[in-house]
Image 1 (spheres, rainbow, N blue to C red):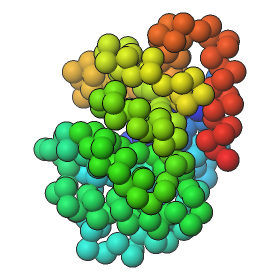
Image 2 (cartoon, helix red, strand yellow; image 1 turned 90 degrees about the vertical axis):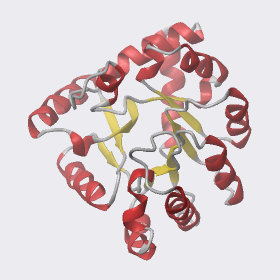
Image 3 (tube, rainbow, N blue to C red; image 1 turned 135 degrees about the vertical axis):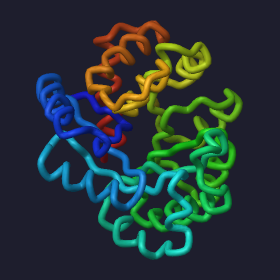
Length: 248
């Protein structure tokens, strides 16, 4: 089994979902499907009832924080029922989309603190806010996490590595030397693979399409193996162990 550690299945059209299903069943791929908001999670959860390769995760994305900041207790039901938490975090990079930063912080801290009892896996968005997210994890002693698409400084990356957790490497490794440097820095036993499908690959190519398919994972895997100077077969063995560890 290969896990796509960060994907938005609710953004696919019904037609494209059929293509996704075919690829997942052919290549034994599972999708850790992160939510942006409550309706997003409800849609993903419904999809997971029909598609056994979809693993639902509940979160409030920093772009949506202003919708929930004044009614945080409304999130409790979903925080309790969802085994995995994400996409959550902070964002000071995509300012045209992000909610006010104070709203982001309140929502993020609420979710991190209220999912701590069961030590639920966190799927983290850190764009431009890598240090602030790290400090929140340290404050609440949350060491079970996936950092999605880390693109920050290497010195802050080292602090995340000291804290624990895993890092999902995505399609930007195909284009960015900085992402390749980050990948070189991360130990093999901390690496997961993601696509951020369906739109991220197209976005990196300057297009606006929601048609990224699960087999994009294989492009990422091949590039990770090239960067880490490891055979695909050896990497897949390590990846399998990492996936089993993270999905406990």
